[in-house]
Image (tube, rainbow, N blue to C red; front, side):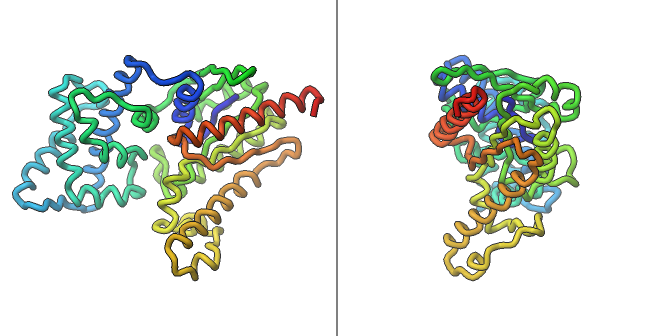
Length: 342
């Protein structure tokens, strides 16, 4: 199975879920290595906010004016850290000082105001989760739990292979990570894959790429899906489409209208007229997911190809367990069909 999708769509999180579900929990050594990544992610997110506050002209707003000096000192200390943050001196005292700085900054309402405008700059999806967990993360004996690990972010480079077994079936999952620019050189190597698992971050309809701030992330995902779905190498290969990050999408649809970024989207009349906020959100969620699902499925030009769509939250283990079970059933049916038994 080939795992594809634009950057930050949740591919690595799905791989982690496969490990958790089919191989069991992480050992002590693995958790310790993720601890460094999690602290690095937390630092990176706060630095991104501090830099955005400057460009968005957002000031610190301490409850006590005397605290402004400390906030500025902490911000200066974080902004001056050498990169990559994952290679910082990992002594407890060093981490403790940095995490205290982040904890203090996170309590400032100006910092929180900036996070609310995160679609205007580049910020990890995990930022809020780690900031809200900062008391636990800053404990001397902190050990990451499964959810901490699932939300950690390391850019995938190269092609990674993960092998796991479900029942009678042995799966090899290839994650090609950030190899988009070299795709023409390797794509034919996967001509015989059983299926393609393609991830799209639903929540990124209002965001731009890291590497190109003129390109909408959803438009990039649509272009990538089109090129893979209609590639001559995969003309008959079934595709399983995960419309991912549904949890973030659900929180966004009311405050960041889809039609501001995709003019062809028309909000349902009942959503515009409904006085109940929750009913309005539910209607917009259904309409939005249907809109993007149809947009992707409609790109398929091959009558011989099937596309299976699932709405997912890659950090929700129970949901992903259910979805992967459904994927397993799809693969079994494909194999039976290939053998002429269906």
